[in-house]
Length: 104
Image (cartoon, rainbow, N blue to C red):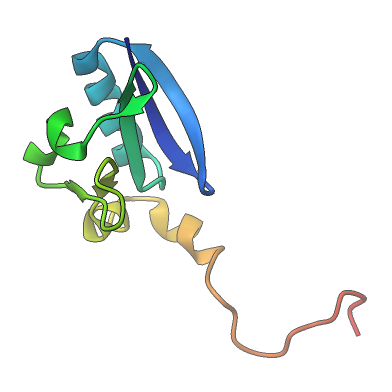
């Protein structure tokens, strides 16, 4: 039995259980559709290496730099989609005066 996870805010969030092929497709869609960058598959609680998932055949994905089980969507592909610009703007640092908590 396989299970797929994506990383949201540094926490592992399960996106489903089932067969390997269906979960690979589901993980691919989830990573391409959201701003979430990385995910992985497990089999019986053990994490599967990214090379064994089959997702690396797609040009849009790569292996995680620090963890060999992570499948990561390439940054250029992730940030060039419609609608992601507005989502990313919220995390940018603002230039100018910083207001205190009380607006003073």
